[in-house]
Image 1 (cartoon, helix red, strand yellow):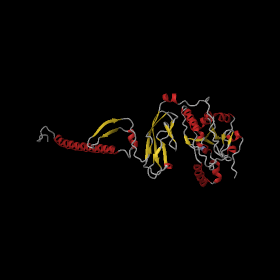
Image 2 (cartoon, rainbow, N blue to C red):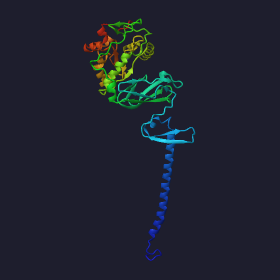
Image 3 (cartoon, rainbow, N blue to C red):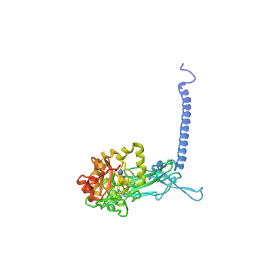
Length: 372
Ligand SMILES: [Zn+2]
């Protein structure tokens, strides 16, 4: 058995060599297949990247981007730089804004103006959102407010056409630049009394304060917009809150007579007149029409339990604001507790009311009741 033709070479080995060769070939084939697959995948990814722009705005903002400079001859295309910084998003929409980027300080506000809308989209379809509310917030009207230094993107979408969106790069400048230019009002600084519109008929001023409650209405044509002093003082307030890491933003500001007509009619349709009257004003009776009112943050009872609401209740008067419908004062104000609704009256009056724990109706000794 040992003396066979194979001599010292054991048959096992010869078979093993053949098998080995076969195995090597198979392995090579598999490796070749993997390489081929890899090449196909890479080629695919490359072709997707070159098409980016419409569908991959968010990806473009975070990944490495190759800038391509095209000369008049499309054949001569030179690839120049490769950047690793976040790229500006590609805006492929029919929105036309007066600016694509915003530079603000903490507490400062800027508003890009919409110059043209996509077909079928109107002002009412504007939907603003912030990519990072800790850096900059945006309200329903596109007022962008800096919260802390950094960069983020604000998006404007069309509610009528979800494909239409435009992004605005927001840079909030660092603290060292804000300290010199934007000094928030301190407790000692005086927040002046609001302006008096004595050229408009049908307004009720008591002790220099414009009154709008269930007993005193505003004429339909009174349309002052958000008063500058109210807005400026609100910015000082948000800026001071931001220094304590509190995020207070403008949720809703001025509402015209016509705006309120629509809002109130909707609530009556939903809840009936009796219930709607406890939380929403009839047109002409809304304090928002004075231009001296801001609803901060989210209009929700839960806001009352936030540190922002606690800070607001303690400090609003320093900036000239009062919590207009305080807890436990429903019988005077005619409205349930609204921790988010602040009214500008100037710091002198606001501080008096704060110290005496009075609401506006108590302070002015007036009623707030509908006649019918
Ligand atoms: Zn309000």
